[in-house]
Image 1 (cartoon, one colour):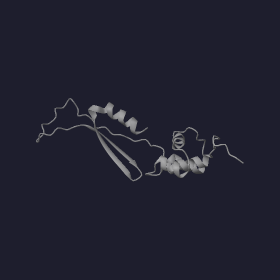
Image 2: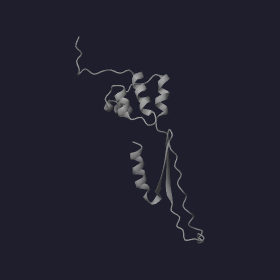
Image 3: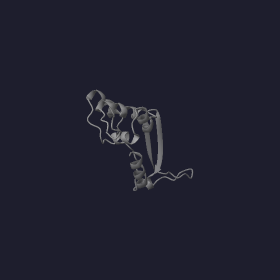
Image 4: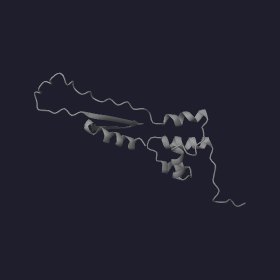
Length: 131
């Protein structure tokens, strides 16, 4: 019996969840995971974006949900009150207000400091990073 090579394969929700869980592991690349499961990496990218993935049974859904991005609270420094004059510093040092971003994923941690004067640029950069 000859199988048509153009016929699409159907993958179960459990299989998709297993592949997505492997992609969520720290240091895993989508291309390497796709290759190990004999899949096209574009297909796995589609599954990661939520296209083509059907609902997953509750036993494996916690694994996928744990790898989802979480809310990151940012604290911005308060500007000094304008009504009270600031005391003159003993040393000529300039205080620069900055935005501090800290990311953690598994064992990897990254800290980024961004000047408050460029907050719009920081927001644009952060949108790209979180894509």
